Length: 571
Image 1: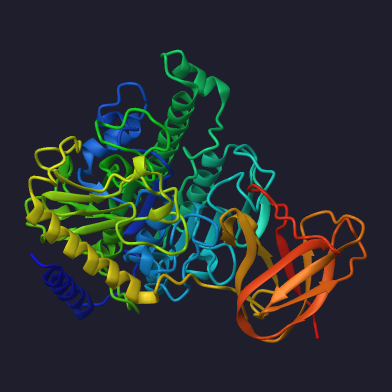
Image 2 (image 1 turned 30 degrees about the horizontal axis):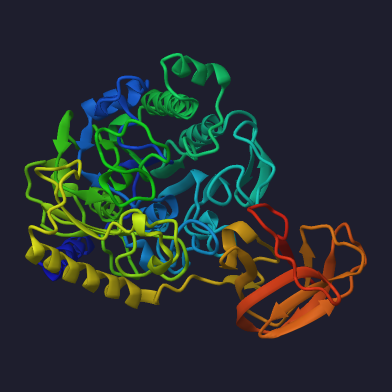
C-alpha cells in the first residue's frame, strides 16, 4: 500500500472522529500515560528477563493488551516530540537531545492541549525535554499542573548541582526542593493529582527520568542484583526499574482505591532502547541506534471498561500513533492545526484481528542541527526493514564519521529475521531501491515542513521577564566551541545580562547581537552583569568574558559555567 493511500485512510479516520465531536464529561475515561527513560525491550520480566523484578508490569501486560511490535525513536527528545504531537519530530523543531536541538515550536498542538481543550484536567510529572523557556515549557503547551526537571535529565545543566535524592524540581514554573527519591516524588505528585481530580476527567503524564544515567539508586537496592553476578551498571539499572515497578503498583492501587480503574486508560511504554549493553530480548543494538534494540520497546495498555483482557496486538505501531488513537478511543473533540503522521490503532486494540493498514515507519536521528539523508536512518515496512548507516548517531556529518561506523545500506526480513542477523541488501537490490525511494520522499517531506529550523528563544516578551540561556541544552556550537544562542528579541528591550562565571581582573562582558559586538565594563567580578539595549530581531545572541588584547577562551565541557540570565529592565 502506498504512503499516499495510508494518509488517505488516516484522513478518513480523522473525518470520522470530527463528525461526532464530544467534550469530556464525568463519564469520559481518564488517561494515565507512564513513560520511562532508557528502559529497553528486555528490561521487563515478561520479555524473558529472568533477573529484573517487574511483577506488576508483567501482570499488567498479561492481564491487559501487549503491543508486541511497538516502536519509538532511538533517543529521548525525538520520542517525546512525536508522542506529544502525533507527528515525526523533524516537523516539530526537535532535531536531537541537546545543544539547541531539543526545543519544540509552540504552534505544535500537544496531546495535553488536546485533552485540556476537551475539558480534561492535565498534569505532567517528570521529564519534559522539549524546551525549558517560554513558550516551550509544559505549562505553555497544555499542562495545567507540572512537576518536572529541566533539560534531558536530573543533574544535567542548567540545574546543577542536583541529585536523584531530594532533587531540585520545577513546580508550575517555580523551583522546589523535593523530598525523596525522584521516581517516588513524581509518582507521589501524580497520585495527589489523581486524588484531587477524581471527579473530573484527567490526563496524567508520568515520565520518569529513571533508569537514565547517572545511575543513582539506594545501595541496598542494587547490591542485591550485584550479588547475581551482574556488573554494577546493570545492577543499578535493574534496581531503578524495580523501583518503577513498585511505583506503578502504587498507581494501580490508587486507581482501585478511588474506584477509577475501570474507566481509566493506563498506558506503559518506554522512550528508546537501553543505553548500556545488557539483556535486550535478543534484539540487535541499543539506544541511539535504529536497529531493533534501539527503537522496539515495551508497550502495554489496559482499559477494563472497553478492552478485552489478555490480548496481544501484533501489528506495528509507534509513538506518534498514540495521539490519534486516544482521540478516537475517548471520542473527544480535537481541532488539530497540523496534519498528523500517526494513525489510530483503536480498531486493533478492540479487535487484534482487525487488519492494520500497510505502511512504512521512519526513524532517523543524529547529532548536529542539519539532518543528512541516510545518516542513522531506517524504514520499517510491513515485512522488510532498510537500515542506513545504523551506527552513526554521534557525528554531525556522515563525511566525518569513522569508516567502521558507516554500515552502509542493510536490508532485513523482520518476519524471518527479527534479530537482524542476515543482511539481504546484496540479494534484493530492487527491494532496496524501492525502500530508498520511499525514504527519500519521506526525508524531503519532513524537511519541507520547517526546513529543520529550531525555534528561537524569545527575549523581551512580557510573558517572560527573566530567561535562562543554558550552554549545554540550548547553545549554538561549532564543534566543541559554544557560540551563543538562537533568540528572538520580540520588542526592543532594555535588559540586564548576568554570566554564571567569575570574571578575572581586566575582563569585560562581550555581547554579540545582530552582527555587532560590544564590550561592557564589569563592576562586580563575582557576578558579572551588564545593562544593554537589544534591538528587535532574530539571530545569534552571544555573551562571554574576554580580556583586552587577548583572544576569546571557550569554556570546555558541559557545565553551568557560561550560562546567561537575561532579565528585562523596566524602561
